[in-house]
Image (tube, rainbow over all chains, first blue to last red; front, side):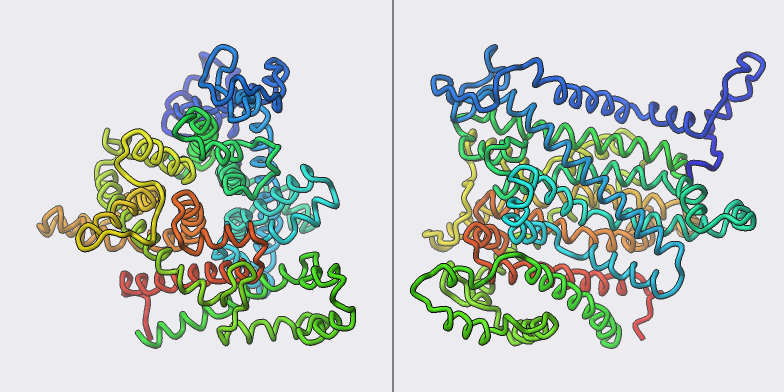
Length: 315
Length: 319
């Protein structure tokens, strides 16, 4: 519903000052942005997430200790100047490992979200545009997927196909592609339902009718007219999905069934740390804390986006 | 009521079939031959291998194989665990009560926490209590279960030494002491799962109550002089719980996911830890069966939600 003009009460209060600043205009997107920044926790979370992303991208260039630099003299040592986050049981620097692992955790999160979003939009759009049996069948499949036990199935798929994909694209790439596809493959249902619901109401609106009268094809109707107006709730759902995908990947790694052991994703670090809780609690605390911080930041951003993009909910 | 239940059961059947089909297709598509080991074993002549393949119907078309598999599953013939040398159904029956006990109690804890907090927050929206509860709920469901589990172990087992961090099925104590030990070891797993679910339930309940509480019929009840507590419990809550039941049913898959993680952390001998150990041991029959059992449990809980739904909302006709 982004495209529809919606002004919150304060916007109306600010708007009637055309004489003072005639150049100031309100577009729906700028309006949404303003509402987003007013959600203080969401604004703070955006900054935190941006800093985290910056650290992950730039960090390994500045913090040049290799992730597999074994140093037995500094085993399991706590935070110090030489190792700000301490070291693990082989004396490897945890800061370097977490910066590297964060790249993978975040990449999995966003890639899986993209997979889920694309699948959800396509399925939802087809269901929303077609009436009758196709719609019913697609919605039945959606409901079926919603009631599937996701973690057991994730584990099953990875168990069955791991060797095959690893032999096809190599250990790291194969596991990455598989984990992204599988996590994304279990996260499209909410988006599909949202898109379908939006399509059902939007396809009957007058502006769509007008476009159809002018001879627009179905594809053009969907891509140019309906989809942009249905995007608000989808963006919110997509944001939450990033957090869910990061948790799913960390869960797999934490169970020891995700990425291979030499790739230190945050979940894998936690898995290795859990046997040393009594002597090296910093190990678990830093890696778990990183997951928590990322997930809560993304969830707050999702909350802020909901306020910003779904004006019906703003009171 | 009986008719209504029967209808829900009939609707649940296609889902079960769909899930079994998905499982079977996954298994059939998976590369690798179940008799791969035999092929590399020089002591077994190729004729024997071919005979075995024929006997187990591995060269049949996929639909026939699916049908055979389904019939076998329905007969309770779930295969034989490679790793522990017992029938799979026996193995699962042994383990399932523990899982249901942990999940059930954690759901109870979640509702006991979420109901009062969610309702109170919605009765006074945007108050200090509401904001604090909302923030804590946000933190609660952003903390992954595997991290909370480790945190609780770190605090209560390692630092304070109050609670055991390994769940034991064979406690040697007797009498009241046995119950106490049993209770003590279950606290942390149930708290981990319960608080994680409770956090999201609090948000569901808050927004559902908030939707209902401004409706006219609530004002009418107040105007008639019904006491505030009675308005909330009898008039608001009952209606507000209808969407909550749906949301809770939708949460079931993630509840089972959380149960697997918790069982793995605290080494609870349930079907979740059975699944993980079966995967590590390449024990395919057990993996398939446990996944199927999880799917059945989800559908069972959805049925349960339907029944509660019908009880809460008299507009749903049982006829």
